[in-house]
Length: 318
Image (tube, rainbow, N blue to C red; front, side, top):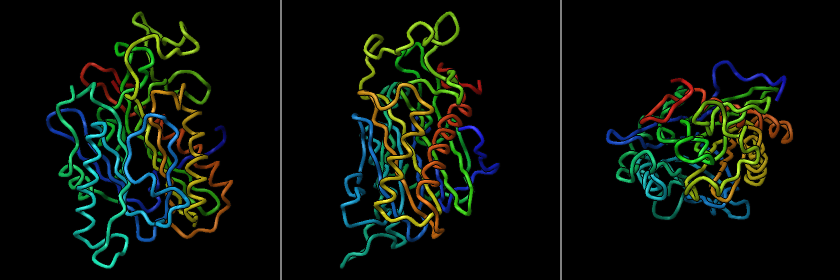
């Protein structure tokens, strides 16, 4: 989005980020610890999602507080990482108040990275606990980290054509408010530059981009990809929004995926965005929404820009 200026040093909008990865295979998890009073919601556009507590985050449900968000590889097995995050928070008596004890609200979502792990190693509760314990307010690591260590893009072209995905960050501060976005980029589609050209995606074996041969990026033609793709996003803002407005912000933020990934929201994707309000700044929703769209698109692009080659899958960093 031309003219929008991104923060030179990414502002995490009050979140703390921690990563953990397996020593046996390229898979891992990422944890976002929320400051006290964080409100949030989620919007799931991909028809093949894997998630936890996303129903609770819908605007008509009464609980609005969120204590952490967990992203993990390992497909549905990776949802176990959130158990470790809950244990970490429970030890500090952080959670939604109940008559017996506080219950941490830890929504989670996963990517399918079993192509990289052969389905032998999955993020688990111990990994989630480690990532939560490692979370800091200045963690700006990108690329092959956490939940994105096994992420890939361009799978519409078949497995021989894929490139490395990654974890990307971006933030914008304007008119007193900050919008932060973090993305785990594991898309079936290509990641697209602002000018519409391919940044990373399905490659031709003889060089160049496969889209030159198939401008419609026809998905069923080239191999078993159903359910194996998802881009996960956290959008956090210091603007003071309630749960209903956070839900609208999550919906709006999907436009950032549409600007940076083609195709997006296909039958083979599980794209999910969590939107969090972490502050008390009075800000216009429409302005914050525009900032969120731009931040999400930039975070997606940064995820592949910072991705290194791994296990024979080429990354832009080499």
